[in-house]
Length: 87
Figure 1: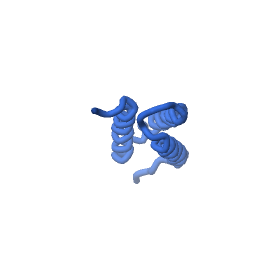
Figure 2 (figure 1 turned 120 degrees about the horizontal axis):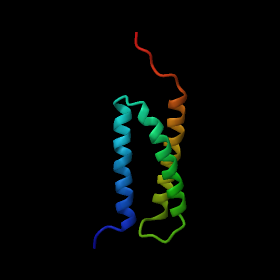
Figure 3 (figure 1 turned 180 degrees about the horizontal axis):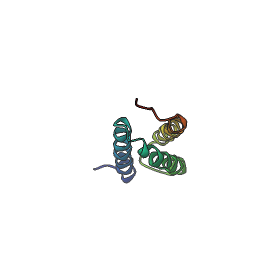
Figure 4 (figure 1 turned 90 degrees about the vertical axis):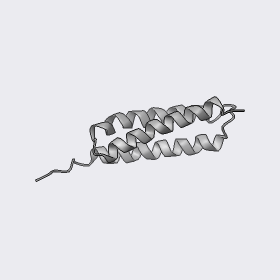
């Protein structure tokens, strides 16, 4: 029994993404620059694993790739938006 190593890796990465998302929601704008690269590297890693033989279904990898790409595009848009000013 037990979980496949790939599934455990996906859970670990998901927890990192959750922590990044929490930090971004708390207004840590500097974290967006780090998250941009983390999500981009994550998308490349997941795309490389789509075609490997794995216990994790390939559509999970495809879904993870789509989520990573959407996160990169969203962060790119957020980083190019000017920072809010307080008066």
